[in-house]
Length: 42
Image (tube, rainbow, N blue to C red):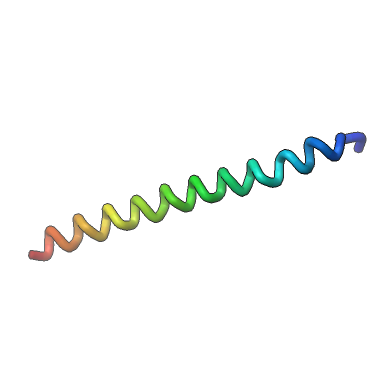
């Protein structure tokens, strides 16, 4: 494969940013669900 190394080095940080974004979304949804379940229990 003749992929320029610049593309490979560019994709690595981009995938890291995407993983952080999805992790933050997952954590945010978990916290929202936790707050809703606590509010319903009281």
